[in-house]
Length: 172
Image: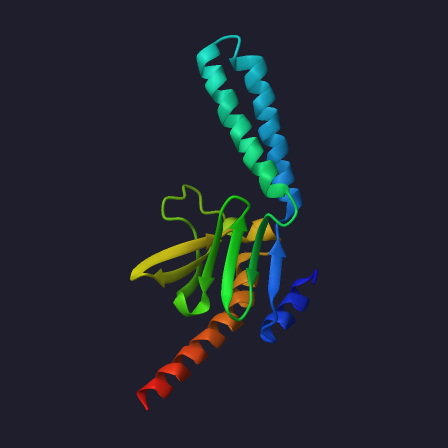
C-alpha cells in the first residue's frame, strides 16, 4: 500500500496497516549527524580535548541511534482492530484501542516554533488509572497529521462502538 487513498480504503475496512519509516528523512538526518561528528573531530578536539571528546561521544551516540532506526522493520507505526503500536527500534509501545481516550493534532507544549508541517498526532490513553499521551510524528512515516488521523479514526471509532455495546450488554 503505497498511496494514502489505498491506506484510507484499508482503514475503512479495518484491515491491519503498517506505516514504515520514511527512510529518506532519517537518512538525511544521519548524514547531518555524521558531518557534525567529523566537524567536531576536526575543529573542537584540537582546541578543547575534554569538551571535544564529550562532543564526539554525543554525536556518535546520536548517529548510532539514527542508524539503528534505519534498519528495516525497526521503526514503524502499526495498527489493527486490537492495538496501536509505535516502534523506534529500541523502544516499542503498544496501546489497546479500548485504552485510548482521544486522538488529537498539535505540538509539544514547549515547542519553540510551531511549524505547520511538523505537527504531531497525540494519542491520549489511560493505563493503570494514569492518563498519558503518546506522540507520533507523521513526517517520519511519510504522511501528514490529517492523513494519519484519518487512518486512525476508523479503528478508534470501532473500538468505541465495541465498548459501548459491551457496556450496554453488561447493564442488561
